[in-house]
Image (cartoon, rainbow, N blue to C red):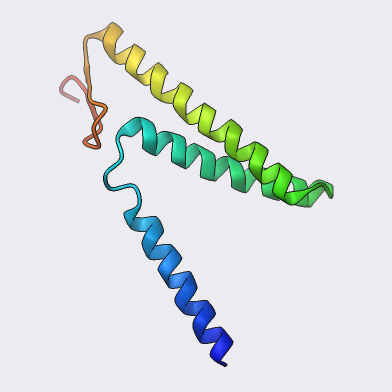
Length: 99
C-alpha cells in the first residue's frame, strides 16, 4: 500500500511539473519540446510493436520530433514574414492579421 501511495505521489508531481514547465518558453522552444515528446512516444510505441529496442526508438523519435518542431517553427516565421503578418517568438504566440 505504501508503494502505491508513493507511486501516485510521484506521478502527480511529474504531471504538475509537465503543466508548468512550458510557461516561460518561447514558441520555438515549446514546439521543439512538444515535437520531441510526441516523437519519443511514437518511437517507443513503434519499437514495442516491431520488437525493437524501446529506448533507442524513443531517443531517435525524440530527436526527429525536436528537429521537426524547429523546422515547423521556422516555416511559420517565414510565412509570417512573407504575408506581412507579425509573428512573435514570445510565449504570446502568433499575432495574425485580424483573424
